[in-house]
Image 1 (tube, rainbow, N blue to C red):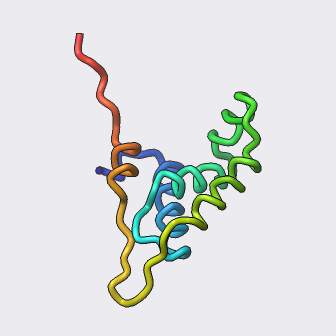
Image 2 (cartoon, rainbow, N blue to C red; image 1 turned 45 degrees about the vertical axis):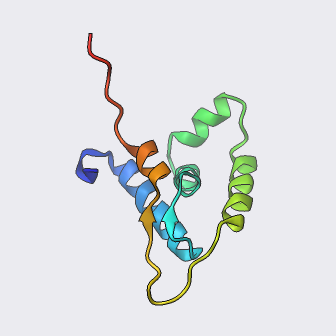
Length: 99
């Protein structure tokens, strides 16, 4: 994935998701980490869009926290964080069908 092709906000969100994963001792950056980071962004677009859809960002954030708490933790010198297959697929640019 070419991070330089992403917006600054998207790059910030990916970095925050990786930091969150590392802080919580998770081995992989999962979609839950990324959504949590997107919700926490100041002046981000995710929380307002969810609000227009009737989703309370605070409620979703607490559900994400609960899901993150249930994830297995890794400890020790060999612990490193990587993007899970699911996270890589969800952040990959989607190609448009050719006509």
